[in-house]
Image 1 (tube, rainbow, N blue to C red):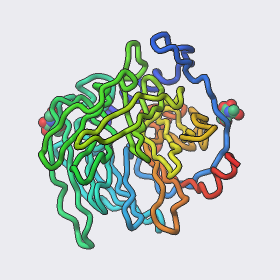
Image 2 (image 1 turned 135 degrees about the vertical axis):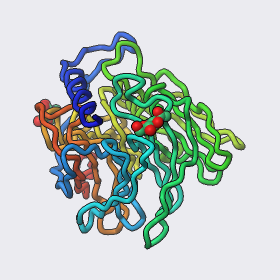
Image 3 (image 1 turned 90 degrees about the vertical axis):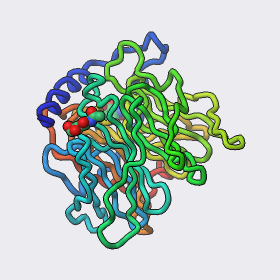
Length: 359
Ligand SMILES: *[C@@H]1O[C@H](CO)[C@@H](O)[C@H](O)[C@H]1NC(C)=O
Ligand SMILES: *[C@@H]1O[C@H](CO)[C@@H](O)[C@H](O)[C@H]1NC(C)=O
């Protein structure tokens, strides 16, 4: 049944995203896809392909270099070692849910992740409205880890997606709600939650082609960055702390025309964004005189190189710190020329790349 609903979703999304660019958006005045960006291509290597169909949704990189990957096509967590590229190992299934989404490392080798009944973003029901929870998994053991534990249900949420740590000392996570177009703050000490950021840039907006607002969210160097899918925005806002309050500054749009799923920030604050239905890996320069410049690193719509990329992240060992890993859903959300492949783990060698384009 699930599979069937995926293919329905697939067809719907394909027709949604295949339409030509609509030109200026009359609600925001922002020109959509106005900036095609320069191409500076890195050819990835495919480290592993899961069975078809498998939607790899998100991952965190362990201190030992392994990837902890969440799936949407089944509520499962896999471990994958990108250095040996041996077959992934299924760690856990969370049977009370249909899908797992955002995952973040909290303290070394302890992770939180999102579980919910997402099958497609088309309607509130299919996106799992009211079904979402946050779980914890502790991998600080060499033997088989304990099953993930549920930390909190967030029944008022509509569609929880990207997850990030706001403060370890205060026990705070933030989670993007792609359905409501806002960010929740979750207190894992008190097991409570509240709306943290609710701004127009995160909303789905009227006449949206896709029912997804804010998607990925990350904090780096005192800024909070996010992708907003329906509005095709990549934004940031200053994040400051005043006593126990966290305060968000004005929202700054860094780039438009970005159909961004999740992403990762490098140490300079540049964003490596997977544009899931556009089959692209895109770099947005985060600071300096070239801030906001959009560079296509790999792929193009309906080219299979990065078919359905959902999340990127850099390696953490000396051996792979310049390797950017990308997981994909194989085009489930928007088949590449009508074809879906198994979700993949791709590796992009970025050594010398930024120096090469920024000089
Ligand atoms: C980048 O490559 C894509 C796919 O090959 C192409 O459609 C696009 O025109 C290129 N963009 C530029 C600025 O060269
Ligand atoms: C989520 O889906 C599971 C499996 O179908 C079901 O048992 C559960 O009741 C659903 N949860 C909610 C809150 O709808």
